[in-house]
Image (tube, rainbow, N blue to C red; front, top):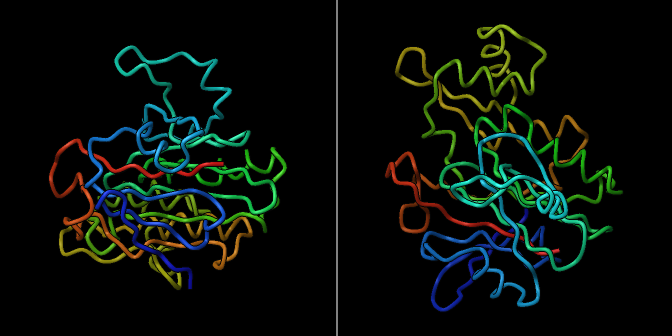
Length: 256
């Protein structure tokens, strides 16, 4: 099993994953709020430059070079997107999350990295396979990738409509009709769906769906680590939008 380690910086807790031990990285807790990725980058690697996006729950993956050439949104001055892949050393890539899954990827041979924000919409739109396709275009081999999924809302507490479950499930089953998709998901050996007492609702494990997408690409379970923390059930460390209905976040980042 891949191990997750707690560390402290100035008395504040953050997590790292043994799978990404070759890179400066961290899944930071709510205790770091409201520090910026720029501040956190100084701590992780003083010479690195921080990159982040205006996250829109989609599947757009960009490089720092592409960010420079894109139109920024008026309000935030950031470029819209939900994933970043590095092109050269000392690029620190950041994603923000509250219940959505932060995904950090490193390639042990090319050394390039990626940071992705995979909520249910991004997962339905296959943001992680999208990023991996881009890494492969930049020379990565599937076997060399190491993928860590940080703290996110766990399946057992994440109630969604059948419609949402089917939209996400369509990314890993060949079916197109809602009920067929739901049935197919329930039949999977390690199903990402759990029953819910409310009619028309189920519980959905988004991280598990991402793992299934990765496995369908040919990535093995040994290359993937999932943080054993649920943002909703761990209020002492993580914000949860579903729990608090507040627009607060925690940052996750990795430096090439």
